[in-house]
Amino acid sequence: MAAQGQDVAKPVIVHINRLKFTYPGIDGAPPPGAKPLIQDFSLTLHAGDRCLLVGANGAGKTTLLKILGGKHMVDPDMVRVLGRSAFHDTALTSSGALAYLGGEWRRDVAFAGFDVPLQMDIPAEKMIFGLQGVDAERRDRLIKVLDIDLKWRMHKVSDGQRRRVQICMGLLRPYQVLLLDEITVDLDVLARADLMGFLRSECEERGATIIYATHIFDGLESWPTHMAYVSKGTLRFAKPIGEIAEMKELSLMRTVERWLRKEIEEQRRIRKERLANGLPEFEDQNPDGTRVIGEAAKKAAMNNGWAGGRLHSTLAGEENVYDLSSNRVLRV
Ligand SMILES: Nc1ncnc2c1ncn2[C@@H]1O[C@H](COP(=O)(O)OP(=O)(O)OP(=O)(O)O)[C@@H](O)[C@H]1O
Image 1 (cartoon, rainbow, N blue to C red):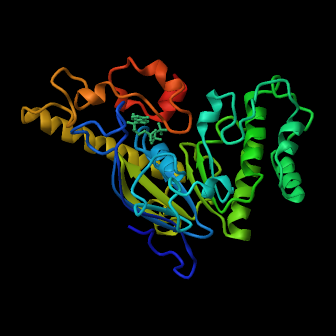
Image 2: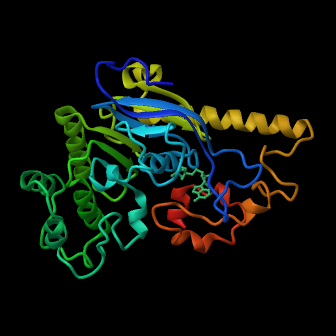
Image 3: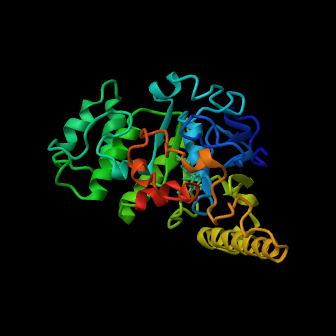
């Protein structure tokens, strides 16, 4: 489904066409019998669109952003960013045209993409000015927007201050497509508002396209042009913000809350019906009560693409590996 009501004169920037994806098991192949995590997912976004990606924990938002960012291989026709397949055409990310800023930074001392240790005794200035080929005006603007003190020593700053430097570095290059995965958690109200304002101007002034997965809706009321609601790996809908009926009477947060409450009620009803019909409560439940299908899946190594399975190895012994969304992993 394309986001309805968009300006068709604008170029298509992101095109997802009936995407289907299953995380590979330890042998690199999808576990036999595993239900795809993402299925029949289609979405089209145009230049200048700012799309909020919403959905419950584990719905598949991070997975989708990673697929878009070229970190998981899918059929090249299923996902096109700027007309190219990010997985197969690595120049898309290395050129900076496609940028991804994700929550995994939080647990990671090395900054994705730049290979710079973030917690060593190094001034923010050295990190920010260390990146070559950057437009000086853009750099100054970002330093101002994120209110960065160039003298900050990276090993002594707060989480929020470190995050500001990370975000600054991630935005130094003028991307055409930006994928954001819950990046504002540590930011104070002012830094968050200024950052969102900056990102908005990027879309309005130079036609950048942004997809932002978040659970924090404070101050985002007038930010998105579109909303995409994901539920259990499928797209419920993607619409321009003006076409979302609930938003005429409810805030953004209450709107999403209403969707998620409805979803959970539906799931409870389905589970009740299954039990009443003598079936296991969950569709993907094994007889022993676990919810991973097949032996290969039980042994599946957690590999989240961006970080080569570093953190996930600590979770290898956990039973229901498929019930751990990325944010849950981060919060462990
Ligand atoms: N590397 C992996 N291997 C196998 N399954 C995974 C892997 N990473 C995530 N999953 C599973 O995929 C599902 C979707 O996870 P994902 O992180 O995409 O959800 P999300 O919508 O971003 O959740 P949240 O809002 O909690 O961040 C979860 O059930 C999770 O257990």
